[in-house]
Length: 289
Image (cartoon, helix red, strand yellow):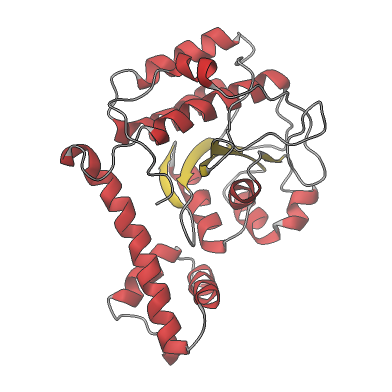
């Protein structure tokens, strides 16, 4: 998966995120396409990091909360912990983080079941703020899924979000100017525009999440620490294998096969991963529909 960058020994300290960010991004109100603006009129880069700062109580306090949450935590636990921290620091319903992978994102962690579900919905639909943020390498701030332009841009996802009690989504790409490894997705129970201090806190959490993903152990490192990452790779491989089988069954290309897989999953209230597993275990054939 693309997120398997260089390995590091342990989880990063949150305060390092402020020091290592490549450049500051001045926050602004979202434009018509939902992207956060900069004072120079250009969107922020994929680095997912921004000016040091935090909640209304101050950036230092936010950094200390983040640092305490990830101190001495195994790498596998860091993404979920940071999702929980985001909910503590910001007026949010939930948070999730996904790795960007070929075909569809792979969920890495979430603060609760609702956030996890909405992450899976976007992966299954192949559409939504999360995938758009990863594609353009800039934050996507969908501030009103009930009555804003986002509701018209992603109508099916907006409906699913509303049914889950979520009316705004803020997606921040994770990585750097060269590569986007995933997204941090924040969910609000009401339509709202994040204030400048709230945006700075979100960027700070995204920056630490980026460091955590870059520090993930990979093949050749300690087996106990990498077993969870291997499980994620297995999920991704199942989807790719299922796509290949659907291509053979229907005589179609990979994009169409993935679209069929997603459509079948969504129509039945399932995840794409659920249906992929049925395909590779011979319990589902698309040429018999």
